[in-house]
Image: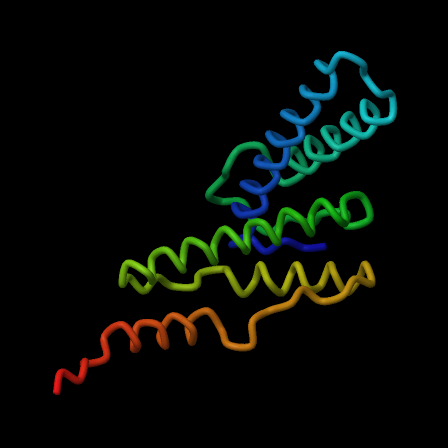
Length: 153
């Protein structure tokens, strides 16, 4: 799967977050009083997958980096999770800004959605439910309700 250059930074951030999260979970498993071999192996596999995705996308940000081709067969669900988490984080950022009355550009939010939807389709998973109205439509409607003149008669 080709990750467009403008989306690489989101996948890198998501892979970094996944690596950090996997490391924390692995640490919990190995420090428990009785280590379950299945949990140990699952934690080690998750940590290795996160590490290899992080290395494949590029450990350091490079402003001249172009598109990156990732082997979807190697990390299908991990890449899906990374893309959806980054999509959700960007939506939260836009919602927070809109709540403060600031309109931010969508940037690569639609591209994140399309890439995640493509992986879901390839995996045979149901499409992720998306609200019927777009985020911008909902925020504009909310803003109109807040700023509607009140009838004081």
